[in-house]
Image (tube, rainbow, N blue to C red):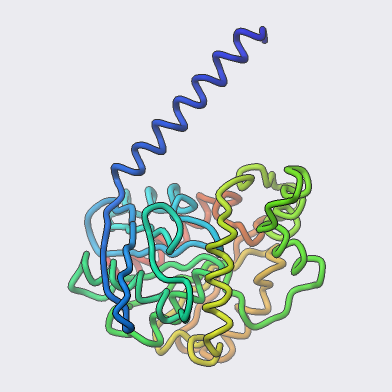
Length: 289
């Protein structure tokens, strides 16, 4: 390829990326609420489709764009989806001090309350699974079912995985070092981590981690009394399969586990079709439609 062709390709790619960003900004819907301490919170969500509501909550320090593919598939199957940016991502804004997991969960609950007068299904990925369990524990009237992607929180990680998870939010790493950390913490062997080269928000992750530390796990771990589907990645080293088994063993009457092969903690970019098939099948069979 000539230098001119390379430059043209880069220009086209940049133009497409800018167009995609602009389209997402125009598609975002803004929701406002006041928290229990009287502080203003603004929540941005990308709403697609019509039908029973499914709210999607992203991973630690990441945004709603992680759900672009899954939300499109779910909405095409006859559901309304709301993929929500957490505080500090996109147009979502809110206090970061004196905040608990329940405060963060109420942001997503506010979106559901505004969009539907019926309980919604909540999908939480990685850290988002903790948020939706907190919501189901504190606001059960808003939640019909939970779908947990990468449901950790009970089994400790190996030291190298813990170090890699922290490293993905270190902004002083070289691009190569950062991608190596992403690969170790988030992707199954042989899967390309480059798709998650970007999309990291260290300040958001710090605020979410502080909220988690301020909330005893016993107050959210069980997810209230809500039916739960855990979509477990077979190669997840952050939320290892033992986490899913522990929750199923504790609540065999309402917890179901489905394992996705050749996927790590990232899951969504690794096995998009398999995950969507499992989720949509559950939504339909559970009477969410």
